Figure (spheres, rainbow, N blue to C red):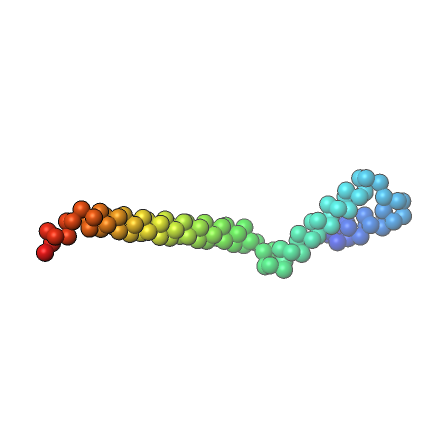
Length: 102
């Protein structure tokens, strides 16, 4: 008996006998299972290689996050270096050390 048959049977049982809490929970569980399988099939993750595909996607996402974090750190690092260079240049001009360069 597949999941669709199980769900149909539970719905028929609920319609015939009325629905008690156990039947309603079973209906919700089976409907969730059918919906999850349908969604996995729609996105192409319903075959035997799905766990490997998901693992590769996670690795790719982790690499993207690492690269993004590294790029941010580099940008901040260059901004700080530029600000310190401007500060040092300002101090040099303020102290009159530019006369020594002439």
